[in-house]
Length: 65
Image 1 (cartoon, rainbow, N blue to C red):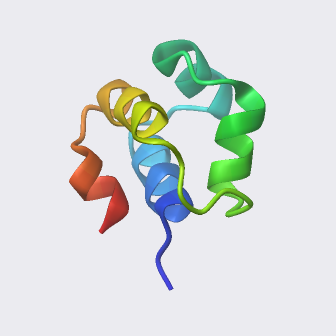
Image 2 (cartoon, rainbow, N blue to C red; image 1 turned 45 degrees about the horizontal axis):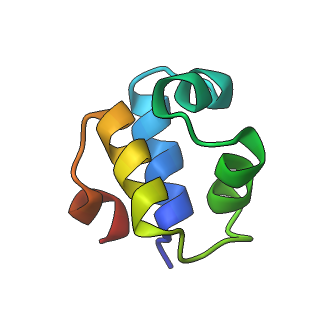
């Protein structure tokens, strides 16, 4: 099953970003990002998703499909 976390990780790796890079670009806490990518948090808030999507240059829809 493809999850939001996997999609974020895939998009991040495609851009060659580390988690730290994404944390800096998005303003999302490191613990939050780690939890999302490891599927501890399966439904992140819309605000969090918006920040991550913007930092990755993709739409929220692309991350949740």
